[in-house]
Image (cartoon, rainbow, N blue to C red):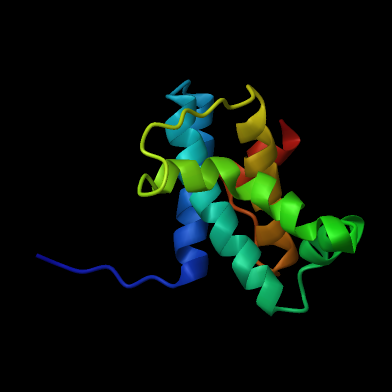
Amino acid sequence: MYSISVNKIDVAKRQVEASIRLHFSGEDPIVVHTIASAAHQILRDISGHRETSEWHKDLTQLIRPDMKKEFWANINKSYNFLKHADKDPDETLELEENINDHTIISCCGYFITLGYAASSEMLGFVRW
């Protein structure tokens, strides 16, 4: 038995790359969204703690101060649905067809503006 030592950026990078591969291989969009959303949350949290992420700064400046809570609640809605069932075990979720495109491209933006080199999967997705 062995163990793997990873930091948050390593985890997010692996999740973004896996979600891209799954997306292009036609896998279940719910699974793609779950993985991409987990990466997005990590990258967004890290970006909120660092001054280097222009992606996060630009995004947060576009949100009206009185709408920030509602904006982030909408961003987190599907992610929270996919990871929690304690408060709403019978709720259903409707995902827009292109939500994964938006989530993955946002992950790539966060990753790159945090100062990390984009992987071949990320570059391919951005070009696509």
